[in-house]
Image (cartoon, rainbow, N blue to C red; front, side, top):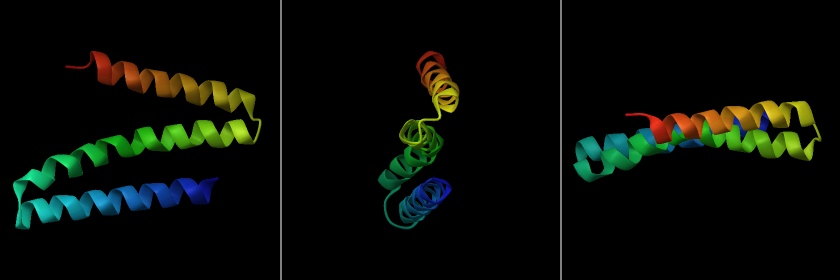
Length: 80
């Protein structure tokens, strides 16, 4: 599980960095997707964790991680 999550984090951050650099060098239109991907990376990590804990039948961690995911979505929904 840790290998999958760390790979996901590395790829998301690398792709986000590439988009941000390309946005600075070529077109500013690429900066926003890079920032959105960077913001979405922790959310993706929590989603992958919920799936992984479910597959491993770690129900306590599924519950805790699901609460964290709901709080993340709530904070993005209600945030200003």
